[in-house]
Amino acid sequence: MELKIQNVNKIKSADIKLNGLTVIVGENDSGKSTVGRVLFSVIKSLVNTKVSNVREQEKQLEKHIQSLYRRLASVGIGQYSIAGSNRKISPLPRNIYEFISELKKVESVDEYLQDINKFIDGLEATPRMKSLMKGDLNLIGIRMTEKDNRAASLFTEFSYLVESEFLNQFGNDDSSDVSINLYPDDSSKPYFSYTTVKGVVESHYKKEETLEDVTYVETPLYLHMLDSLMYAGAYREIDKRHRPLRPMIPYHIKDFVEKMNASRSFLGSDGQFKLFFDNPIDTVDIVGGKFSYDDNRKSIVFVKDDMSILPLNTASGIKSFGVLQILLEGGFIDANRPLVWDEPENHLHPEWQIEFAKVIVQIYKSGVPVVITTHSPYFLQAIRYYSAKEKVENFVSYYMAQPTEDNLVEMEEVTKDLNRVFKKLAAPLTEIMNVDAARKGLEL
Image 1 (cartoon, rainbow, N blue to C red):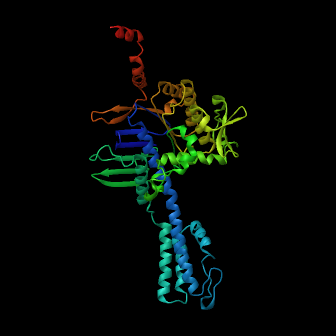
Image 2: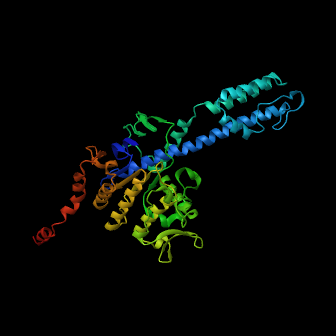
C-alpha cells in the first residue's frame, strides 16, 4: 500500500510506503502521529462502510421482497400454497429468505426475475396490482445489480472520523487543498481518495479493497483504564444533550479499548496467533509472565510466579508487551489488519526497547503491515539490526519529518541515508556530553 497526504494538520506533503514495516522518525510535534491517525481514519471508514453498506442492501432487498409477497398473498398466492383461480405452478420460493438465497445463487438474476415476471403476467389480478408487483420485482433487480451508493456513506463516515480524531483541525490552513489517497499494491487507482478543492469535497473508493481492520495504539497505559474508557463515548456515540455527563474520546481510543476488553473471551487459552504465525511469538521470557483474564476479579491480570497482578500495579513496560500479546492472541492484527503504534519506546528501558523492536520485526515477518513512529535511537537501531538478521530489511522503509519554511513538515524517505537520522537524534546528547566544558563555563 501507499499513503499520500497533502496539507493535513502539520503535514505539507507525505508519500509513505506501507507494504512492509514503516518507521517514521521525527521530533515532538513534527506530524508523525498525524500519519498514523490519517491511515487509521481511512481504513476504518472503508471497513465500517463495507459492513454497513452490505447490511443496508440486505435490509432494502428484504423490504422489497416482503412487499412482493404481500401483494401475491392479496391475490390468493401465499408463501406455502396457491389458492383459487390463481392455482398455477409458481417459480417463487416459499418465503423471502429462500428467495434471497436463490437470488444469490442464480447465474443470471435478470433471467430468474423474468420468469417471475411472466408468472405475474398470467395471474388473475387487476392491472394496477400487476404493475405494483412488477415494480417490486424491478426494485429487487436494482438492489441485486445496481452499483451501491457506498461513496456517499464513505464520505460521511470519514468526516465523522476526522471530527473525532482531529476535532475538525484537519487542514493546515483555510486556503490549502487537502488531499488523501491510499493506493493498493501496483495500482494507479486508489482504494480511497479524499480531496478538498476550493472548499469542495470529493471522495472515491475502489471496490476491490481487502483491508479488514486496523489498530492504532497510542499508549499501553489505557490497559489499566479500561472500565472508565468503556463508559466514555466516541464523538458520534454521544448525544449533544449528554456530552457534559459522559466524557468523549477519539475513535482510535474507543476501538483500542473495545479490543482489549474483548480479550476476556480468549486470554488464558491457546491464542490464534500460534496457528497464524510460523514461529509463535512469546513475550513471557521478556517480561517474566503473561496476561490472562481473572473471572473472580472481572479484570485482565498479569500472571507471574502464580501471582495475579492488576494492570494498575504492573510496570508500564509490561503493559506494552501485554498489549502486543492481546492483539496477537485475539487475531486483531494480520495481513489485512495493519498495526499502527505511536512511539512504542515510551515507558520502555533501552533494553526492552530493543526487545520490543525484535518482536515488531517478527510480527512484520509473519505478514502484518506495521507502521511505527519513534524518536529513539535505541529503537531505531534495533529495527535495523533485527530486520537485517531476519532478512527482511529490503521491505523496511524509513521516513523523517523535515521542517519547511512555512513551519510545516514534509515526510522524506531516508531508507538509504539513515546516518542523517541518527545524527539528528544524537544531536541533543552531543550538546551536553562535554561536562568539563560546562564546569569551566560555570567557573568563569
